[in-house]
Image (cartoon, rainbow, N blue to C red; front, side):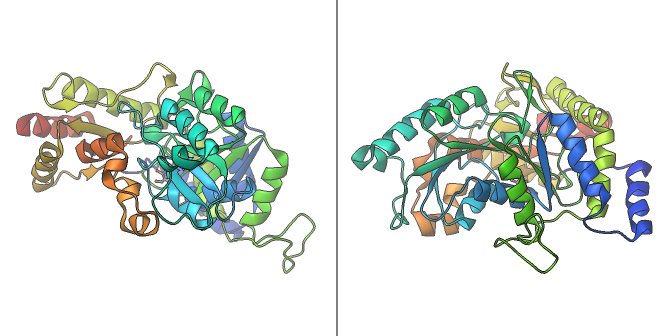
Length: 384
Ligand SMILES: Cc1ncc(COP(=O)(O)O)c(C=O)c1O
């Protein structure tokens, strides 16, 4: 499905760390944080061992706790909801824009108004069960789906008006630009992820960015077993976690960031090759990029078919040809443990369901050759 783009630079960077025998909490994590900070223009960056742990720290720093309501979308990777559950909070979903899969800002504002109004109006948006200890609405967790930033100006206007924290899950969007501002910097907190299918990889890893100094210091403490500034190795001011990023991973991240423009450009080239070859085919829609996305940093290449049967037929045909493909996403609100806990039903979010039933991610990475793209495209045309 994907492949990291690694060179001798990355191999040497990891070897150099191993030679130093300083494998954790050394200089590389600081260097990597500085690289991301400079790249995004944020005041603070906190390296962590996954995008999921980064999102968790943001919610904790934002003071999200048991019973708090967090508005988010079901059309996402599971972690954006899991971190809400880790805090004992309640995920409340809003449907998405059918073209981008990002949160629909009109529905978002309606949901905020109705939930704050309470009573029957609020009920329309809230889960059918799991609401025994429900409190008030505290935050919006937006997702930059497939690398494309959500409509953050509108989300921020809503967040400000109704006094909500805005956490931007930018795990799929490092290097994308929204109205000339970098993804990840568009809410109160932003998070990137570095699994091997991402724009850059550290094997496993993530990074939180923010301009909030107090929150940054708190998150740095929570990632390091709750040791606050001044604590010794065995004293712990807070309940913390081991969410640290090791030095080999950080070194990999530094090397990848030094080549970022090339990495982003290669992915963009592969997307353009697909765009040219798959354009204007009946029964197939290609990724839609809004004019607000002034620069797209591609994460995956997801095409849509007219219905689920067509999508599944294509998926099977390509799989039979040993071309790896993946339905993207299976919505979160229909995952068994979420249904058990909150009683959401498939039809609660029709656009999310439709995208999930019709979407197929095809092989995509910055190291794909034009011949490989050609091969996959020919097969898709043939089966269409
Ligand atoms: C939207 C989104 N959020 C969160 C994550 C979590 O990142 P990680 O796998 O590094 O924990 C991912 C990773 O794929 C993601 O795509």
